[in-house]
Image (cartoon, rainbow over all chains, first blue to last red; front, top):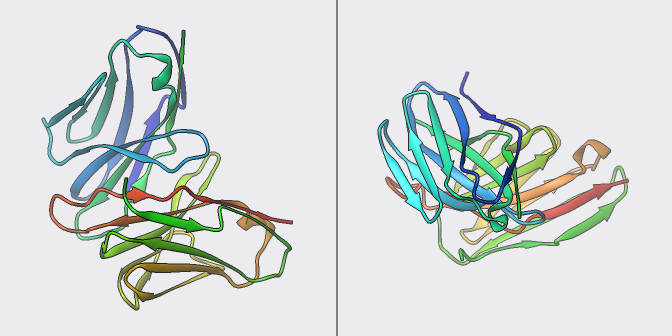
Length: 110
Length: 114
């Protein structure tokens, strides 16, 4: 069964304290792995797409990496405005049904 | 920002009444999705559409129906609302082509069934 597991469920960081969020996935084949940011009361906002193991993408303080079993979202020197829920999703091969993890709630303290 | 509009933004209804949520896009994307988001469950797919009049079920489709008579509009109907359908509903769109699979989401509809 295709599934996505994110950890930790919640994370509190001090401003400037770098860390990583994990997304483990099990799929028979992978079309793409996606990271989203979601602020309270809003819809998820697209961050990155990763297609194959070894691929990396960066945007400001965020860097996403992909292996055959998991993806990491690295947050370098986070700021309070990085506080949000980060969602991971996969699109298995042969389907257009995305599978989402339950997210990691990140709180960055000033 | 992708042109996706969900309506209404908030809805309070009573158990047993029918409810229709609307998703409207201005991007001419082929794929449209309805998700519900609940604490502890994340985003779960209700139904999706891959073209006008072409739809398929997701993992939590019981009690829901959808229709897509135009490319730009995707309607979600709760035939007879129940308290378990209290949730935040998100519409999403995708071009559905190689390298263009990312989803764009609407702002959501908060539905409360009393």
